[in-house]
Image 1 (cartoon, rainbow, N blue to C red):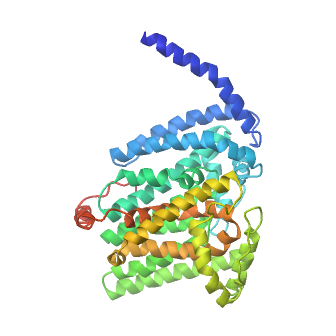
Image 2: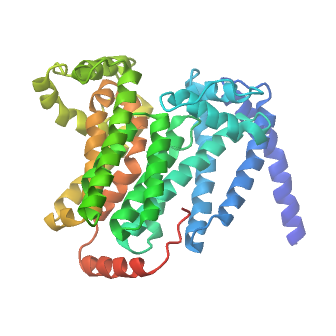
Image 3: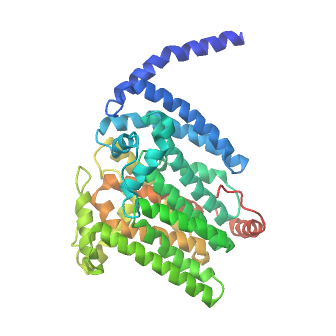
Length: 438
């Protein structure tokens, strides 16, 4: 009887496979690959191989089980729900990265200033074992996105002093995180860099161990190699909060000098990147950058002249709110805009609950201060660009969304007994080795 059931299942799978491959070929006509059926079959095998690799991660057993389940959902998104998106948008950057990755030799140069070439280098390396499959390459980037999310979760565990795998599920399966961390492009790579930096910064603030400076440096460098302005955005809150955790004036002065030098170097490279001859041109450069993104159905112009300091000060609260919580329902008249609007409405509701339940004593926690500063600095830097194109704002927010979700969950938590549990957990964490993948 059991054998008969297995034969029925196998027969059913065999019967629907041609139908599935026909749908894939129809939806994938924009993908620059000649045989979409073969492409998709390779991707299915690669999805299983990557899923099994999660069992080898140096992570707690409960985390590995959760990661395998989350990976199953990400595979469904990458190989299923993303197909209509790829059919609708024929000029995706993902196709360019894929085509360049198929070249026998990677000819472009890499460097701190060229995020596109650096991402092409990542795509070229990831594509080597995949036999030219676009969907398999997408899964490799999706795994990078999952790693970035998991690093943020491990940072949250360090902050809380205890495990809570529900936080991992919530962040990883949040719709924007799930979707945009699964594309072929810069976003999953940036997510790994920011996650590394978050892990290092929280570990340093909680445990004051020098080993956590390595992920701070590596994560900041990786993020800056893709989006150069993320270097200063990540370093400034680390300097402002982290220096207070150092013991002794000489150590503080040395760390401050190294941090300021890094910010100045990255700032100089950023000026070169966006064509600024002097710091005095920063407002004009911001306005020009915002205008460059203000195209398409979701484009809009700032309501004031942001090339003037007074106008920028008036605009910043609106722009920062837009970077974090828009588009809202009705902002973008499309199915995609409606879905993003509903998600942002839920995010705004969570922020309101977190704001209502927050206490001033939360700001005495250096980790909370660091995360708040990071979110504020990031939203200020992206205010003009996100306001100029609400569609692009959805994707840009992936950079900060895992940290924002973790912060809002913490602030919105039930308060009874949590402070004592956190303090006890922090003391236990300080005595125990970290079991994270770093």
